[in-house]
Image (cartoon, rainbow, N blue to C red; front, side):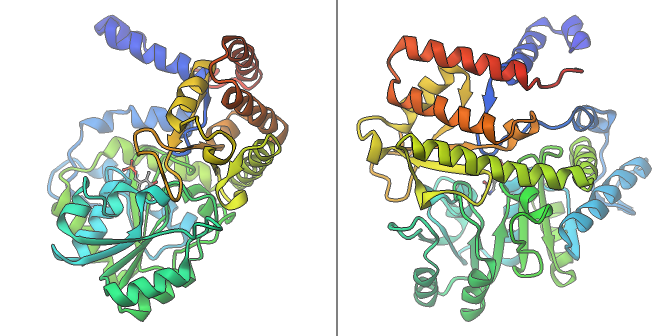
Length: 416
Ligand SMILES: *Cc1c(COP(=O)(O)O)cnc(C)c1O
């Protein structure tokens, strides 16, 4: 693999080889990650990286866009079939750019966004002060119920009444439960605001019907295309015909130049894969696996935010079981054993975003490797052992060996 890179540039080839080995030899449990198919990788690495195709299919600003039109139209048509949206824009370079596209289409600087707090599971692009969304707009944030870990929909309604937002954002980065889109929609309507449902993490679960869909409920649905949907890297916006022109103009020329046509080819290929019946089974297995992982962690005495999961991820609050252990320290110890996940803030965070009180773990990547519930229960045991004895080298070594064996039993990218 990467022979041509090696000839031209050994240093980069070494790093690429290291990354392939890393993915093969570790358990990718960062909840936003997945392993795209070799076909998606090939499409993304294709000659389309050379092409400028500013504009949209049939209306480009440059010559030579026939194949680009073909690829983008395929991506759009497949996305419409997957999610049932009236209008789809597949050009956002990322999920963040997709959100930017919606804000720029519908809001003026200074307008008001009401979104979930980052430490409660929200996303930077929903209005954190360090992000453009927090700098351009006036942001207020809602929270999850500290007792249940579920979105506090009643609190949200009261806050909306008082704040009078122009847009309400739902859809989250570290939220293990199904979102009740209709309830957020009712809140948005009650204050005459738009509703943006950001399904970045759960695009694949929604496409497969294992999580309720906000398409046709919310005014706008955005997502990342490389998380649970496992397609080429980037973003997507879905909306009704009514807002189609505004969204398209906000993406290009509003906030981007030429589309990343190679990534759009990767999106088209990945969406095509997701239309196959096997993807439905995959998505259901992702959720079943997350439940098995959660059960195993809970049986080992760890505390799960909201008490469990309906999705691809679990969020562990370490404060109850391990008050002296931070999520960052747990993340480091787990990485030593080959379990790669992230320290994460939890609702009511008492440490900091850099060294938070929780860990977040997703099952999309391991499910792509073919793991089922038994393997995930084993992984839950391994995580618990590391968390219990994070500074005992013998425990870390023993866990490492089991991780190596799991990676060997569920090989990845065999044919690369
Ligand atoms: C991952 C994520 C995004 C965007 O991610 P990109 O890295 O920009 O693709 C947006 N919103 C939520 C809720 C996310 O989890």
